[in-house]
Image (cartoon, rainbow over the protein chains, first blue to last red):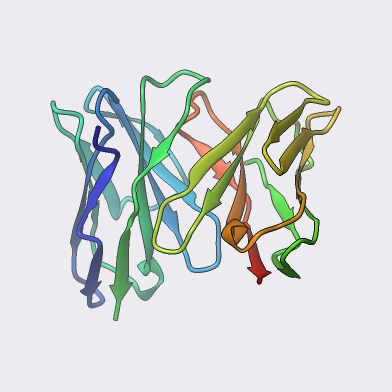
Length: 114
Length: 112
């Protein structure tokens, strides 16, 4: 049973470029949440997708956008990259959007912006 | 926005020692989770506490939820090098447990 898988694992971009990160949820899960984790910090919630729609959003600018596909996989897009966007981007999957349950995290995509 | 403060930020101890990590907020939590994250991996859930005063044990780890549900602690007995990692507390926010507010984490290093 595959867990949450993310790609790519590492990537390097320059300021102003755009990046797309991908996530496949754990088998049986239908909800995907994205987090940004700066070095030495806890993860910060970016947004959550369920039924192909953005359901909740954290305090991130519109440069951060996402998508969920019918197979529940998801993409995170970041436009006009800034140096401060360098971070580990974590995808987490879950079943439904209720108040109980467990999040399963992927290993993350390490983004470096030069 | 719920702000979680963890302390200490760094902890370096010898194998066999005991330690406690704290997670505090000025707000009341509906529930709180503790995660452990190793380098190059995502966080892994250790426990969820829901009821004020609740105590949960996971082998050598003891988790406590404050009576007022504003604070929590993680106590490790007889720490081992395998306990090394980043320990994160997280509160459920919004209307979904998918939206977690994390503390800044405690980096624990256990030396053999």
